[in-house]
Length: 145
Image 1 (cartoon, rainbow, N blue to C red):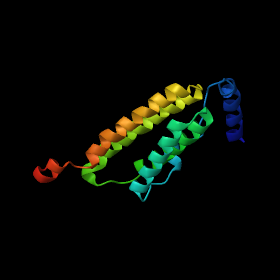
Image 2: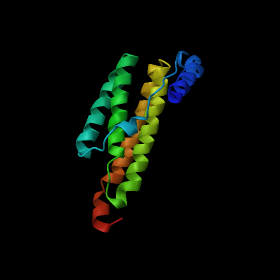
Image 3: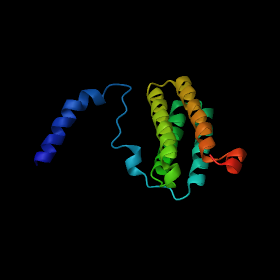
């Protein structure tokens, strides 16, 4: 009974915030609800597919759907255990992508499609940067490094 009363009190106190336009309230973080992927490459391809669809979206609701899908997929890759020598670098890149997707979601919550697309474009730059980390160059294979 005390738990219900506390919940009711919190609901009443936060009611003013919840009814304000532009606020998006999540029940729990996306990362907590997503299991680790078993196929990183396939998951990354799905992220890329959703990225392309999000960039082509002409409506905020469509872009929100695609960005949410990307966030869930990124979270599933974040839960994956990479090789120890690559774990820190890959997690850093995934953390940056997740943070950027959060910024995109904030812009979409404000119905700002143009800013959301600009912010999402930065995810592509992160992808290029961290894919270089993943794939060694020809010279790195020969000489190490």
